[in-house]
Image (cartoon, rainbow, N blue to C red; front, side):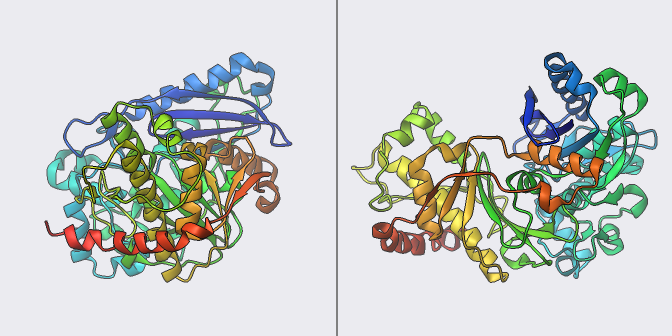
Length: 483
């Protein structure tokens, strides 16, 4: 048996699989986010640990014999979160999360101190990354900064509690802005630019490697007498790629969740920092990946649903399933800033082309189009980095809307494959990594793609109109950036 734990922002998900990768049980324990000031986003690391215990024990109550047979555990988690520990591994302050925007000015500080930063990291520093957060802490909480002995990412703090080891994997560490991603090693230059050192970093592993075993106390509390090995694991998106089977070069997926991701696996490091492409190590050895990231995907639809006081599924179903062309209105989905391709934490969204005739249907259609165009922006940025994508698999809650998938296929001009029912997220990918770490199996044989339920092709009759609408869409941000 193998367990996957995904330490997300809204909850910890646990999935238990057997040797044939059949899901035996799964459960989720909720988490809350604290927002003490506008633009801030924090969580207490102790809450992650407690939620892991709740999730594992819930499965243990369902399947005590299966839990007792667990031999490998994999970890997946929200990326970029800064968990600051002192010499005794005591948490110094609440963790600053990936969607916290306070450190946008500190990104400039890093590049001023180290002009080669983008070349070394292969990425543009973003407020969501870990390194700028530490610069902010030094400026604003110097007493805390002086006590920092280790900085861990969220899933790696959970690993510390599980095994007693300070360890991380290549994919999650790629999002710190301290990693030389081409070399898969910490960068002394990037660390120095934030007044940090290698001693404050965890030991690096591949996502498929064993990083330690459960301590005796945790194994006993969780009902796991075999003291399973804990795999390096991965950041949530690379782990999801392991779950969906996107581990070979050119394999891609689009994740339509609260945020949106266009992910493609690469055989080599292929950065495009100028357009805010995330070029990171993969969670499997000898592989890298690129991501275009949009911060408000289904979050945009939920925003409109709240505004109109109408459930999101009702809004989308009112549009039917036929796609004849784009909405007459244009929506810029930058509700909380944007990453790819603009890397702008302060920009906000916009609806353009509102008239007396504008109703709920037009606005809903505009939101669906706007998110699809944001994915198109990411696709163009990946193409500029030398990546060729032939088709994508779609995952996430937004894939329940058939029309939205048609819009995305048409905007990208790519076929969109929809997997058969199943769970292919970070927790499942983490369980696969736990299996590999425990058994030494070949990751290409374990991380296979699911059965495809259907493929959605671009709507030929609407393609021309969508190209024209996208051409207008890309003119919006440069026009409003300064105002």
